[in-house]
Length: 392
Ligand SMILES: Nc1ncnc2c1ncn2[C@@H]1O[C@H](COP(=O)(O)OP(=O)(O)OP(=O)(O)O)[C@@H](O)[C@H]1O
Image (cartoon, rainbow, N blue to C red; front, top):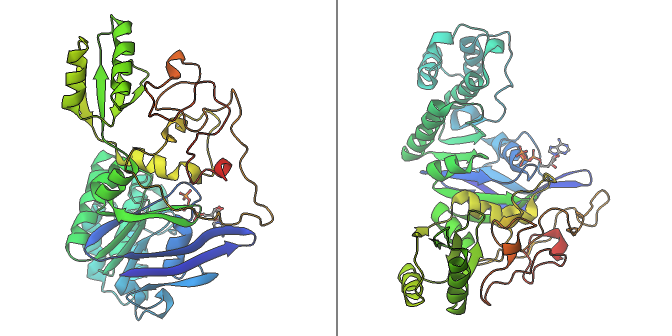
């Protein structure tokens, strides 16, 4: 088990990791998520004793990495697949690592087989593709047959077959009772691979939960309803009817309505009673990506000025728990600047309902429950996301 308690790392005025506490348990794949620069690699380096915490501690099996007896036999890691002597062959690279840790040479051939690099084992690694380099890095992590494995972006550069292979490898390692801690930006892949999630933003813990709980706590099921495209007035009428019945109704760019707060049979009955024909009435569950976007929206450091994701920052769905208010690490220190407030006419402001472009006349939700201002919007939403800088 990996256990971090109050883990903090400061680089001068910059706080990369702030008071992070979590456990990574054996027998499961634990995903490690966070926006760019949120402190994932720094955390992994501290776990592996490559960086010294400014405060707090992190242990593996109760010991700091540097005090683990024969650590390479207990912990395997892929941090940077490019950290290989390019002039060495794949086999020689692994042989060097094996000899340093007292691992027999036959294990090198075993892991080359596991990662599928036997055919190129004698080729210099500097000629390897990104995906081949990843496979070599994974082979190095597996070399000591360790109980604890850390992978930083293991599917980076892999083709679909390679991604599937990594997914199955992670799952089988966890099924053998090992501790598997893996970071990735590929949400769809994480949803298929991980059992548990640790999410950080700006170096702080945002969530430590199962995938299913994470999605249900940070999103809501919804219905998509579509009236005949040929009769726009029906869509307006339906929106008003559903809004009046307590539903939260948001128009989507393709002409459908996204409805929360009303079960499908009730939507059907209401439409029927109002004499409105439907072309679509379908149940939907939010994806991990959508839930992740909602949670980390206010903790993103690097964002394009052409922000297509601003619509994710809508008020939390009914029943969803907002994450606790956390201080921003580094706030008030030299070098820390809050991002500028949303500008009128600039990127889509906070609180805008899902999928509504800035100029859309259909920017108004139907009915009372939706707390979203009309477009264009200058003021913050009535219930700003607790992680947005401009909400403080
Ligand atoms: N050696 C260092 N010196 C100074 N600042 C650093 C150092 N290493 C990391 N940082 C800073 O710490 C913060 C966290 O970086 P880190 O690489 O851990 O993030 P990350 O979540 O792994 O990002 P990404 O997803 O982009 O890989 C960043 O602001 C980064 O610039």
